[in-house]
Length: 239
Image (cartoon, rainbow, N blue to C red; front, top):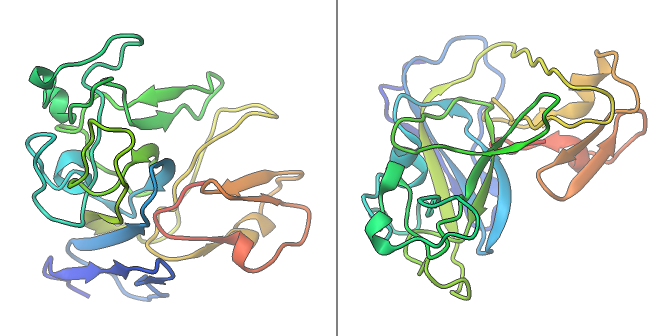
């Protein structure tokens, strides 16, 4: 199938309604735009892209905004902060746009990756103007709402928002490799824009006593039975 860069897999509120890709025998050619809905709540979310983009994080999750007051596409995107991530140092509006981060009074970073190795560290993303998105790469992102909210006020009312990404969908098997020890953690995103049954993924592995958390609300143990809904790994989610 050739998308001609003109296919969007949409979501809508309530978040039980979303489009996904089903089983296929052919090849998808061209970019696909994918959406993920986030209901109004100021919280860190574990997120990933289900496409590999040629454009930057800013162009996708910040909707190409050029400043913290810029809201190019109402109801879409979010603020990504981090102009002054050093502890105990506040930022100023003049720093808005450094590394294309949005200004916030603290300057704290809001987008992180996790070291899937023995260091077991959260790492603030260094910029959004050159970093792109890769299908399956996992992030911890503070989502306050869409870009219409007042990012300078922690008490501002959060809003629903949609994060969209445009790029190539992952096709075929994906191998994951980690350099971690027993009792340590790895964070992985779903590389496909479809639901993955983790029971099927792990049934062919040699993992024993393996725990995983889907997003931030479900824990599952590999050697015990579990309900259907709790082992379904949604597109653009992490574990």
